[in-house]
Structure formats: structure tokens, C-alpha cells
Image (tube, rainbow, N blue to C red; front, side, top):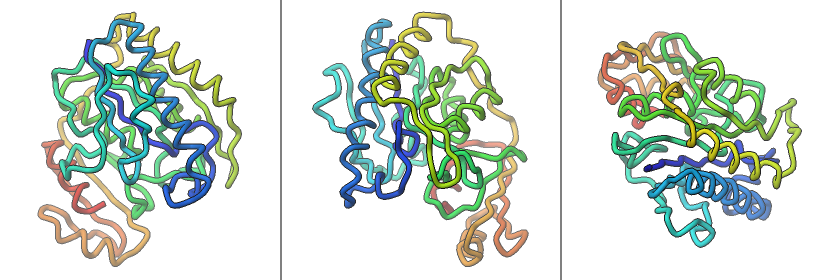
Length: 265
């Protein structure tokens, strides 16, 4: 069994402030360790369930966050950014059996995580076929593009609610609840234990129901915080400026949607 893990940090247990996400800040080290611990827990759960190969994608900011020496030897780690449109899912293909997402967070424009955003933070919000889009949704559709189910998502409670709305068969671990600029979190050790057990449990079952159907047509709307970025993005081939801060992109090919995101977000 071959497993792909995409790891972010803004949905890591206890994280509350941007200073805790940036390598240059003194608050970062604690949450780098917790991000790593949560990835390790997912790896260990997968190995207990019979995984023989694990690819971990460090998908936060610099792509250089996970402490590699803490990972089990069966895992390989993707660091930094290649520039491929799969981005946070770089290296994923149809040879994988399942995708796990750790440390994921609520979408731009939501109020369920003080660090809510979608990709770079330039967008006030993103919609795909009128559905507000998080990084989870965008990356889950990438998994669907290559036919791989998402079998576990961990992060804030707002994101976990979104996952359940998309496919209630996908297990989640909610570690934080955002309230204004604050968070209410479970204990970091409890989060790690829940993740390890949850991954093992789902991978020992028939997880085919975790698959997500990929739409046949995509109408993308990106509303930018800065109208100047919207104007610039409107020159991407196929994009249209509908309002000073809103561009639209339409395609039947999800890879083209991902390519557009790479150049406009």
C-alpha cells in the first residue's frame, strides 16, 4: 500500500498566530515540532495498517518545515517547490492508494481559523462552481484527477465541517476551533494519538467510499483583496476581469485550473 501525505501548518494543533508559522520567528520552533509529530503519527498509523511506501509533501510556505530525522525510514520527503501545478500535491499520481492531509485549515473568507487563507493569501475568497474553495478542496480535486481517495484530513473544526459536507465518509480530526483571533485546541499529545489511530483504522477498512467525484466543468471565481492583483491576473489566458477585484476562469480540464492557480494566486 502506497500512501501520500500532504502536510500544512495552519491547522496544526494549538497554532493561533502568524508568528507561529514563520521560520524567522521565535514562536515557530514549537509548531514546527508539532507539525512534524502529526505527520509522524500519520506515517505510523499507515505503517501499522500495512503501508510499504509513504511520500510526505512538506506543503507549508517554504516547503522546509518538517524535521526529516523524525520521520520513519519508510517515508520519503518532498521539500521546497518545484513549480509544478500540483503544488501542495507534487508527486501524486495514480500509483498511490490513498491521500492523507495533515495540518490543513479553513478557506479564505471564513471565520473558523484566525489563519484562514487560500494559497498565498492574495485572495479574499475563491469559488469553484459556486462552492467556496479551501486548499483542501483544491487539493482533493487534484487527488480525484488521478483517481486517489482522500482518506483522512486533520485541522480546524471549520475545515472538518467542510470535508464532511463534501464527503461524510472521509474521517477527520478536529484539533482547533477558531473564535475571532483566538483558538480553542485539544492537547497536542491527544491530537497525535487520534491521528495515528484514525489513519490506521481507515486504512484497514474499505476506503473506496472516500473517493471524491471530479466535476466535468469548472467555473472559477477569484476575488482578490487588492484590485491591482486582479487586473494583473486577468491577463492570464482564458481569464476575464468581471469586476475590479474579481476574475473568472472557465475550463473542462482541471489541470488547466491548477495551472491558472499557479500563475494567478
